[in-house]
Image (cartoon, rainbow, N blue to C red; front, side, top):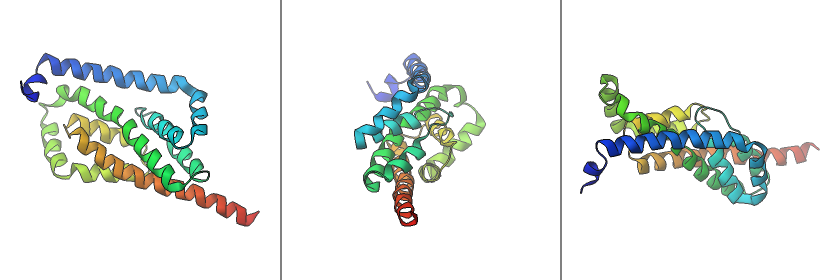
Length: 186
């Protein structure tokens, strides 16, 4: 049985519904964690990785991922912080992608969707990279669009990873530099 036949009809609908419930569940869980997430900072790079997943797994609701990266850049090696935070952020952004994927069946016959699908196939990766690179609280919409438009998940993850690592590197270097600057003043 081919993959397209397996993922057709009712099976695809079930997968989309389960994806939507997964996204909602993850978002609720992250906000229920509250202060418990702060304890992960003491676990060095793995803690930064997990905190970054949690900070980026919320849909639309803000979480302090960049602030954590900035602060940890002052404590640990900024390149290691950028790699851990960027990789975690990339995995966290899968929730937006899954939210878009789960809603794809609703919009796939829409004329606007058809035009956006062509644009995404032609320029989608670069657009995802640039949106991941800049501090952008609305990046979740890019993930939702990528999922809804059918961008392959591996392509989405690669473009997000490149953008997130570079963004996190800038913030972790800024955090490291701020400590040096404060040492010079005081």
